[in-house]
Length: 214
Length: 133
Image (cartoon, rainbow over all chains, first blue to last red; front, top):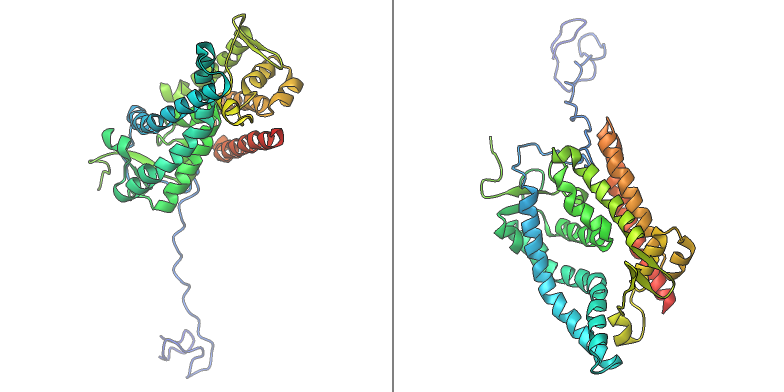
């Protein structure tokens, strides 16, 4: 460095000029680039993770196909249990009464939806929606629909995020009207996210040509 | 097209559902009538275990709340009026978002509001169930 007063040369870490004793005036540090301004996504987007690259978002139809297949598997387990409970309940209450049986079989549907379905959805989801999706990016149903769950950068999500995603989905599905809204939301969302996607900033994309790399 | 009108169509269908329930169903503390015929469904959970399930009374409560009888609906199951209020709030949210010239201004509170509502709904349902046991 050189002294701005006398022009003498001195080491870079000096505080004062060794020749004239004047304090060293250092050039101002280069300004740091500002982060991009906060831009929340419309209709409930968190704005926390704006995709830096163009993701090939899955269509609503593909998502519904994957959703239906995954939930049909859950129903395939839940319905027999509900029916068995219905038959047992009938047997305990009114043996041999066909009309009562019909009533109980119908009545078991609310128990199925309210209690059994979320429990089995979480239990099966630990394998299907957490383990499989963390390992390969898609559940059984999503594999059939050729779609994949990723983060804003196209990477697979960690298990902890998938846990939160599953729990939010089950919680929202607990309220009938909110569960329907959650399912419909990609229809009008810019990034075709559901509400439980937005909760963890996840995206569902088509695969294998999912990410348009530059 | 569907991105623009999807929320409006969904809101209209939700309102139509409420109107349909109001026109086609009625209830009292014991029964529900659909198109004038009393429905006959019993809760398997109650029959099997001798205690009500968390959802017991929801149909009667929902129908009563749609008819404006909030007091009796609350006594049967407080989640019923909460569900009706949630449907109406969703209609306002969807129509408001569609009509807003600044959709991002309404965006930030939607997701936390929906999650908080769902959590309150679940808490109310199970709290009522525990007190009814």
